[in-house]
Amino acid sequence: MKYLHTMIRVHDLDAALTFFCDGLGLREMRRKENPAGKFTLVFLAADESPDAEIELTYNWGSDEDYGSARNFGHLAFRVDDIYATCAHLAAMGVVINRPPRDGHMAFVRSPDLISVELLQKGDPLPPAEPWASMPNSGSW
Image (spheres, one colour):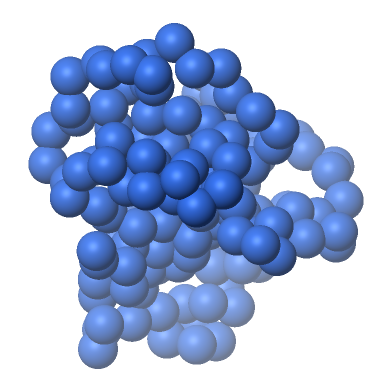
């Protein structure tokens, strides 16, 4: 397993970039604009650890109150076999909130309700049951 990034939601992208880049010395690694979803993702990293990133998520026009733990989005981990990982977690009693129907991505929550994204290493796996037809559960 490899640690990928931590995502936080921000209300003011420019202010957040000023703080993290100018204030802390992080560097913008890449940016993804999604007009259809009305959000921007900006990935930041320190020169000393470019593989450990912070993902700033800016939801265009949102006035949502992120003060109730919505500002911290999720931890993300790349896994060798997303189906085996989800099966192992499910056997431990962990709810698979967003099953890996696409063979690529799933979400679960820690016991403290921290959202954790699991991403398949390499190409997505072919769709497989029970995941392919499993509905989402709760929130993540």
